[in-house]
Length: 32
Image 1: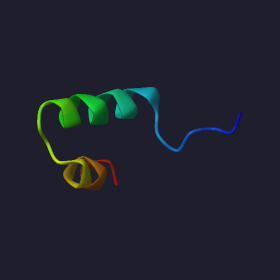
Image 2: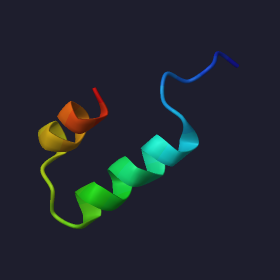
Image 3: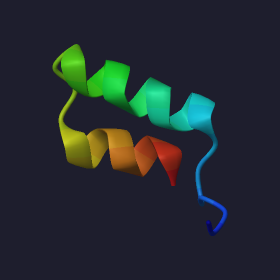
């Protein structure tokens, strides 16, 4: 399996932000 570009913590953070109503493009921008 190839190494993910993001850590598991970053993915969890992004999913939580999306659930809280942050728009997905904004979440993506925060993660770079």
